[in-house]
Image (cartoon, rainbow, N blue to C red; front, side):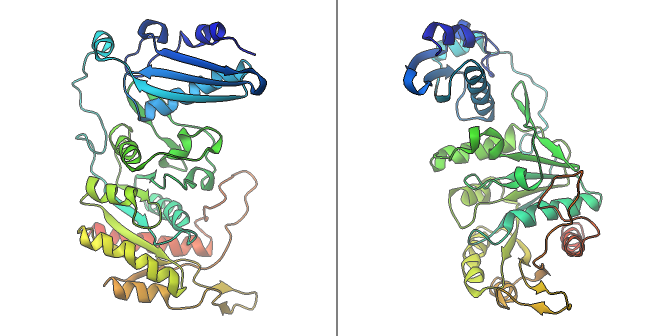
Length: 351
């Protein structure tokens, strides 16, 4: 098992992502605790800025180093360095404007994909709407803001992680769509136990510190319901439009109406409703309404908007060379339905 001296030696050359100086220079390692019987290492690390994307990347780096050298599990706590240390090593301010979404860069159409409850296929709709917009020639990004239930990287078959250049996070790109997700910054699918204010700060960093480049559309996959993250999005992006996802079941439509009412109260325009799992088409070509009928139109009526599409229960085609389990191909019947939805969105926003 590693000793404290060996851990210190391994980590002393790691750089603070904000000050670009080594842990040895800033005296970053504040405490080390070792449980030899479990091969567990607990650390307290002081850095220039906490609760950011860079901290997440740093966490992965430290955990990777220690696991490669014998630790089975690693616990990390971060705190901020003293002001005098930060001032001593603070790099010069780069006056060049960052190409961030909220820092003077591009101004895409923001579309929040929302639902009243989980399990209605909100993330699947997000992924496939993004793909359909991309096929229409649009530059598209996805911000997986479903902090507790992030799933979009798995849905798109993404295996790599974002890169960090200085203070900027470079999103992953898959099938021409840029993607950032909390899932990229969590070790071994661990649960997120942050409270609302910390989550809000992380979401803000995803807007300000990610190098999105020139986008036409940024889709935000929101957590279900009307919690902290949904409210933060409404505060951060007053121009954001909203698309509601429901199933035909009356209960799903009823709870989705709450999310829609919150959008209306915060003066966010509702683009429309997508009714997912609307029906199943059997081998005889007959439609079977597994989850009932009428939920989508009922929700649209309550929110004074329109149903943009009714999506069936179908699997994407299997492709041997491409792993993307939730993406419908362009020539797939459901892929064609998503194409129609995307065309309606573009017509409404770019008229």
